[in-house]
Image: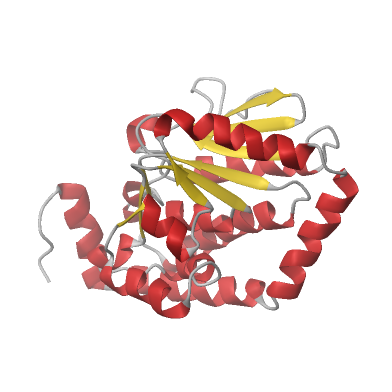
Amino acid sequence: MSAVMQNAAQAPLVLSEQTGSVVTLTLNRPAQFNALSEGMLDALDEALSAIAADDSVRVVVLAAAGKAFCAGHDLREMRASPSLEYYQTLFARCAKMMMTIQRMPQPVIARVHGIATAAGCQLVGMCDLALASEDAKFAVSGVNLGLFCATPSVALSRNLSRKTAFEMLVTGEFIDAQTAAQRGLINRAVPAAELDAEIDRIAQLIAAKPQVAIAAGKGLFYRQLEMGIDAAYQLAGQTMACNMMAEPTLEGVQAFIDKRKPNW
């Protein structure tokens, strides 16, 4: 399976490699900590959608290049287009990609290392399974910039208890991998040297099962759990887009970009 290209002049934003019935998709913006730019969202959605229609693929592993799994949305890109319409479209685009993960028939396993923050933490929450290295850290830290992580809250609140999810959302504090496992955000944390072997073990266990059972079971699992997630994402996207238009939020994001304290 070929890598998904943003364009011919640039490196692939998402790398794809198939070994047997397992495909590994690797987020490939390491210098930007794999921030979810518009191009990254489109490339990832395209790759996932193609896999969803490929009967040769039983399991997907979502990994990342460089020092981090995913630092969330690309704040520089967001700050450059301060319009309500742009933010509404952006968060709808992100929600579409996240829902592609849930709606595709193959289980998706997040391979987490480094940090997973904001929409990156959301991405972990939307994957069917998640394993992390013991040194990984997780946060929904938009609130530190004046932006409540509304769309990540949809995934977070469907993995963690209400109070633990809300604490993360309103404090912006990081949790370590062991805590993430205890709270249900990930399945388990393992030593970094054992991460790939453990993911391969789980992937092979799933791949060995009847494909029709896994596909039907996954669809049923989410349908019976999630009645109204589309509406939740629409409301969360609208909330986040309106929030992003607020002057204190724009100042908070700009302060982050400028590496200074916000002037509120």
